[in-house]
Image 1 (tube, rainbow, N blue to C red):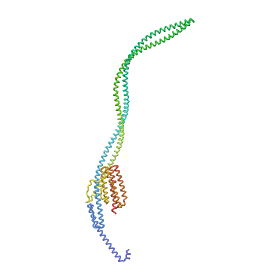
Image 2: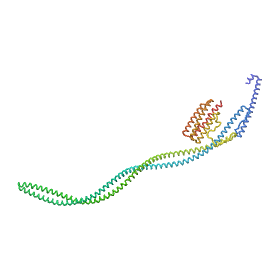
Image 3: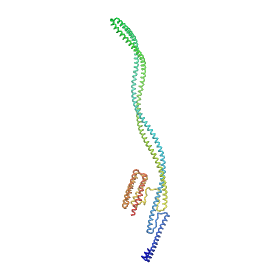
Image 4: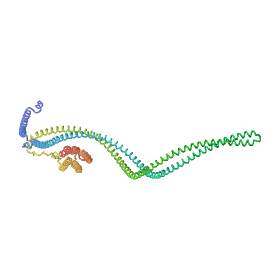
Length: 569
């Protein structure tokens, strides 16, 4: 290359070029040296300021000096802006750390209180479990006693039914007996009169028997006379028969002349024989009659004695009938009392039977209820075991939470000490004894649009008020009203925000609309849950997660994207 230059320009020209090139290099080196000295001087100044600020640990007023409006001045200006932002972030972190420490203290106190409460609950659950076991045993014993009572009432009911039937039967029998008493009284009266007549008749009969006995004695005497006459007739008949035999013999000796006489003799003999036969019969009959008369005399004598005894007995019967009649009159008077008492007894028995039936039904109901109570008691005992287990698990969780809270307090203290080492005249001491619920507005949430920012602030303030109302246990109607108001404003804000994005031609508008639509739907579902179930700590946690945290993430990420888009246009 040198030979080519030498050939092209010549030796003199080459020297001139070399000299010129050397001068240029020297000038460049000199310029670079001066520029280096200027930059180094400025950088050293900045470094000294940084070292001085670092020794004081003060980043609030770090603003590096700049004398010229050159590139280095721009760098210093940018660095000053960046450090201002860092200082503001550190102040916000310090403030948040203070709030977090206060929240940690409160949470630690609540955790200790919760642990004590859970322990107390566990102890109470243990006591209640023991009492429920005793109650379950008592219910079992009571159920057995109720079964015995039910069986006793059932048996009593059967006995009362039988008694009622017996009383009814007895009542009928008593009524019949009363009628019989009246009838017996009448009959007794009638028979008493009859027995009096019978006494008279027995006396008359005794007299008749005596007369009959006299007649029989007279007949007996006559039969003796008749017996003598019959004996005479029998003797005459025997003699006549003998004469008839002799006459027949004589008639036979007389021949033809004696035939007529023989016939007469034969007839006389037959007559004598018949008379003799009849006499025998009469004699036998007479003997029988005599025997019967003797028997009649004996019987008459005995009948006389019997009639005498009958007369005495009838007299006794008459006296007895008089006594019976008097007793029947007394019974007739007492039967009315018996009938009234029986009627009252029937009425009382019916009432007792009705009451027993009712008591039986009630006892049956109680027995069924005791069965349900016993089943419920057993389920309650099982549930108490589950509750006790859950309480023990909750106690363990609170112990873990307490440990984590203490660790969080330690970490917060370390963070506060680290941040507190940076001195700042701009940081104003704040009171962190009270911790605000919800979102704290800061410039970090600003999208640099006054209208949108004001709407975001309204949402933050009303969301905080809604969460605070949930935690304070406000009325259901008030909380529903606040949520409806919040939902209506969300729809209004989304519409305004979408119009603004359309105006600035934001390229992700459709994605933004979908995000808005999904949030409105989810908020509507949460509102339905609130209406159905009412406010609860679980729902408050869900609302903090799905509404408050969503709003912060949406503003700091999604909305910040269109802010940067607008600023870069």
